Image (cartoon, rainbow, N blue to C red):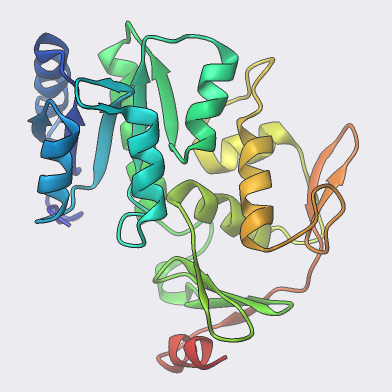
Amino acid sequence: MFSDTHQTPGHILIVDDDGALRERIATYLQARGMRVSQLSRARDLRARLSQSEPDLVVLDTRLPDADGLALCGELRANRRFHALPIVLLSTRHGVEDRIVGLEMGADDYLAKPLATRELFMRIRAILRRARLPPPGLAVAHMPSVLRFGEWRLDTLARHLVDESGATVALSSAEYRLLRVLLDYPNRVLTRDQLLDLTQGREADLLDRSIDLLVSRVRQRLRDGVRQGRYIKTIRNEGYLFSATVVEATGPCASACCAAA
């Protein structure tokens, strides 16, 4: 990572072929203490990421040499970048367009023309969630492994480990949702509550982002579609994580997890 969380709010990489928009965003973010780099093409992004990784990428969905949505999916499929926060920018405003962006693994999706202040607030919220433990959980007592059923969640590496010891990568959004569910086991959480706890915002009338995220986490857990072993759909209410969650702390936790 480029940044030190104790010295700077973060290093943001903007990838958009609109130079004027890039500069406007960069100027706004830099004025608020963020370090910003700018690129205009997908090939430049790939080259930069091969050398070093920023704290967050702001990615246009229509680049001259690539489809930004496909590029987002490509990064999510790469184990090195599966947890890299990504905010998509698009000229498409429809609900379905937002859904597709979230399905590809984006942490957030903003339609153009955009308000730089809103983008800044969303970036700051994503970075804060990525760096801090859940509310009410002191860092000194933060468990390095959470165990449930045949799974272990490594909270340091932010991936799942199954019974055979195989790891399952999680995007940053998937990790946040699973972490919230594990913090509130056997309790019904509404979509609004999940959005607030994972993204710090309220749901729009047609917002299906949490439903899509739940579907993705179910896939990672190899769970059923509606009434799986772990994440259960409670009709007209929300979702319930049905499992006993056991915390493991200390230096041996990750080693035990890897050996499981």
